[in-house]
Amino acid sequence: MEKILIIEDDENINNMIKKLLESNGYKTFQAFSGTEGLLLYNEKIDLVLLDLMLPGKTGEEVIKELKQKSDVPIIIMSAIGDINKKLDLFKLNANDYITKPFHNEELLARIKVHLKSSHKQNTSILKYKDIELSTNEFTVICNKKNIILTKHEFELLKALIKNPNQALTKSMLFDIVWGDESFADENTLNVHISKIRNKLKEANKDEDYIETIWGIGYRMKK
Image (cartoon, rainbow, N blue to C red; front, side, top):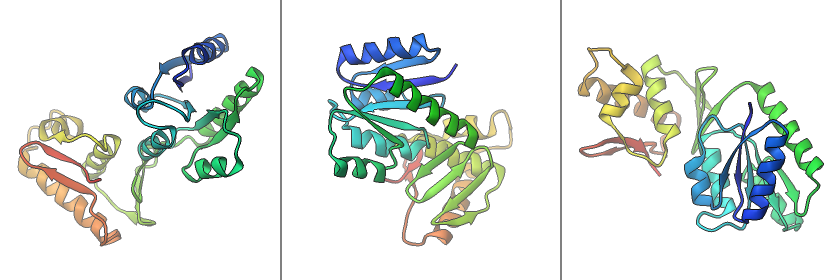
């Protein structure tokens, strides 16, 4: 069952869309602010319906943060019909724009098209700054240059990019990357992080990507 996140602060509209989608076979998640939407989002979400005028994080801020995490399709729902506004949103990588009030059949048709296109690509791309990491193809591009990472380096970078605003403790990274491998220790982790940094630096000497949070672990540098 495909999963759709509805980020809409108008409770009546949010509930109406939820009822429409669930009657058409989709599983839905409801958020009533931009901040709540970002907290609810995870990689299992197949598509996001996003209002622009939101409390907390604005629609534009939500687009930016979601697109840093993944290439999930985002359909904007807004009463703003200005063409320049629409073009600005497409520049932020929004996938579609439907003007309120809309016909239910049109919304369902747009959702179907984007879900089909997303599944056809059959790839999950994580993005941060100028890094693109494909979790299906196990490739990393930085500054438009291919980066060759080992398995453990790839898993470390993936874990950090998937949680760009969170400091991941060394214990968390051990569990995610090495699991029960007994030879992994703090020095092993530090060496791997250093190698990732060096490879990214070779691709883009003007950018720093990973920062050390002393006494805790690592996170992506803002």
